Length: 541
Image (cartoon, rainbow, N blue to C red; front, side):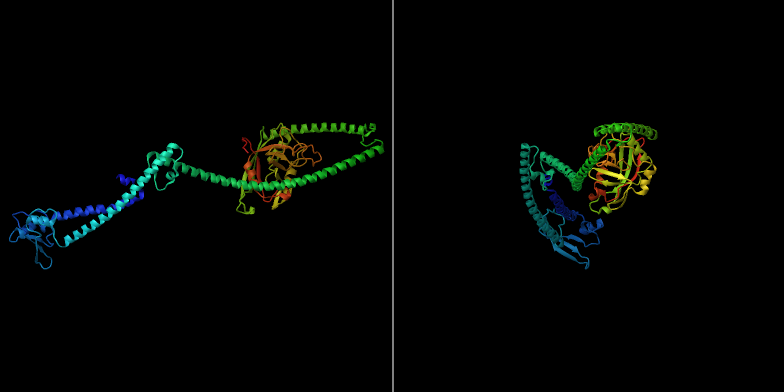
């Protein structure tokens, strides 16, 4: 049993198959013994063979009466007993001499220790069959013995190799408990149940670690594939940014040239003014009281500055009044701040395996938290009124430049072409008188940081944009020097707190960089609503 347990699994299966002949041999031996013992019933001295058969109602030694009868008849003496066999067909009786003289010779002839008075086994066909069967068993047992002798030798060699490997593993484990021989750990020919206790436990532990590492490897492979996809997208964005930078550099050169022309023109106007002032003697350059007192250009400049200060004071009063009215209007209409706006947009989901025109369209949600009412009351109320009157439903995001994502009352016609200020969309803003704000409201405590909202244009509106980078400088005071009042800033009135992933997905939609980043596919604003009685936490970048 110990040898059987140490055998390889495959040999154990073969052994189970080969042990059947042993069982066959045992069954045949037992059957032969039983058959021979059936003819060995002792004949009583008071009955003949025929009486013995008739008394039992069957043939001799239990054979059926209808079968050929085998009886015993005596010769002249005990040494010449004869056996008679009654055939089926001719009804005659054939006599066979005994195998030896007397009981002793009968025992020698039978080879099985038949006692005197017992009938020996027949010598003809039955004995030939038994001898043939015995010869087959001897040959089979010889071959089986030869096979298992080789098997035992092979198993002995494997056990010796196993012992040497086990000892080596224990020595390695003693030197370094965290390391095992790769031959022992990685061998497919040695199951852990055939090793020693320590080595088997270590192998099982390593197998569990292997499965865990395989699972982690699959997970890391998926992450690497995702990172590679993101890298490809970032490479595309970098290429787009390089094109934008080149475009901005060209624009910068153009602006510098334009600025220089404006400076030259201003100097020209100044020279013309000085000439006119000198020729008129300083009179009636600016109509009104006090202008006639200005005898020099310096005195006239002082007069203009005083008038400008008065005008700015009036503007400040108007701005303050508008802001107060905006606070009151916002609270009465929309309740107390803070205010949140949910905007649902529809856009094509990027699929690298398909053409952009075949990309499946999907929807995403942007959530804006508007600026504190005390900092930007007019711009906040302006945007809330636009949302309240559903003016943004059906409009579109049209520009996805490096620094902003801009929306407006525009309609996509075909790749890279839009109907700017579409009549039906723009009319809604004009009829509601919500197309432009009253003044360029701005607060230094709410600059154009990343993901904040700004109003485009002078005066701002109706287009708004999402800052994709920190635009505090170029969209803050003095950053828009191409406008007449370059010291003004774009109003910054809110920030994106949910949907930053949607912004990243929109970066995969192709644009026309030659046209300032116009989307080549439609990005539509499905609807925009004020999120009453909802609170949102800003998600991480």
